[in-house]
Length: 523
Ligand code: G4P
Image 1: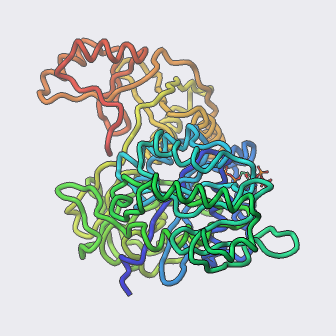
Image 2: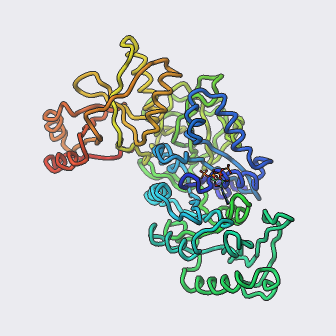
Image 3: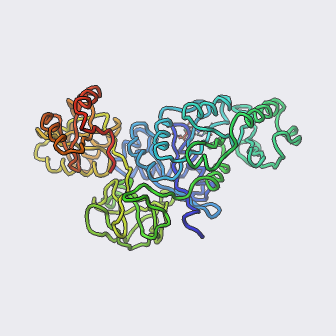
């Protein structure tokens, strides 16, 4: 068996409420990883109840932490990386998207492309991550099929190819027609709830459909499909893999329609592990050396062990338990004795893993987001971004004897990628930066629960931050000398310019043409 070609590492991107959780459940159900739909939620609830700081998740009913779920179907191993659905927590999501080879975009048939979907799509585009579109909730009243297809094409500037077609929507919903295989998927049973019956036809014009589908739906669908075949390009796997075309599937995650076709599409078309951007050269999955990068660090997954789990995407080589890997740039080789593979939220000890797999590595803070791990320390993966914070706050300590603990907590959380921390050149008011409001709540809650530090947040006189650099160190020095009161260092000691407004960034950037002001910093 070829372990590389039969792996699919992917994520689901969507706007909250489009149906990502439901689809995840159904994918795991169809993949045999769980036995009852609903277990993802149920298990999630049990896990949340056990963990203190995750109270926020409970209160808000959202998932702040990402996890990894692995399932197999017909010899293909799927690694589904969950991305937090809440708008505020996008930094984490962005990083997770650096660890996948493809994505499924879930859209609500009544709402079309929503803001969060669009943002996440842009990240996928930056990295040429190919996308399969799943238009969900066709069992509900929604927009016309053409309206949805055209919106995807126009807003996202993508070619679209409809792969399935709903036979009516809402109360008229009668099933889904697969245009590639000419199979009609029908609801069955007394409540006509779930996909039960599959009928092989010769096409939408097949006369046997007249006896099965209402005349009203059938006439409409026949006309539409004819138009669609002329109006949209045929599916082109190469264009999809380049990220220029998205195949579109219609279905209902809740009623289990179209989920099978989606899994088949992932197995047939989605790319297996790809070469990953790295220095000095991209790393091919076929390389012998074991290499990978940490895209996420999560604390307190198990309250009984105050450990952290670094999530590493394996990029090349066959990983074996007990292997020694060296974090590039800092430190000695570490022996990985208890790697974890994630199996529908349950931890399992991994003996072997292959490119595209995600391994959880327990550690006590040695591993950081963005770290490369490899056998011979010859490469460094690039492209894991830090985003310029959109909200800056001063941290006010309520008990001044806790300065040391506070610094440790802020450093730890910066390492995990929860928040960013900036230490101003002048003064002792440390500043934290986040992309979304929710990160602030996570920070305060964890300071209190984990570090026993009572702190508050105050408005900072700055609104945004830029990493500064220059080809000639003298140019950078000239700039920092003159703007010392706005200069700070990030967790890694890189110089950062704190600006009062986006306008000021533009103004200063114009005045110091030889200095580069970066809104993201690759780790
Ligand atoms: P999310 O993770 O993207 O936020 O969405 P989630 O799966 O939680 O789905 C949001 C709501 O949409 C849920 O209803 C869910 O049952 C419903 N839903 C998901 N897929 C479909 C579908 O194909 N058809 C229909 N009709 N509904 C769908 P809820 O009432 O908010 O939650 P719940 O009480 O059902 O859990």
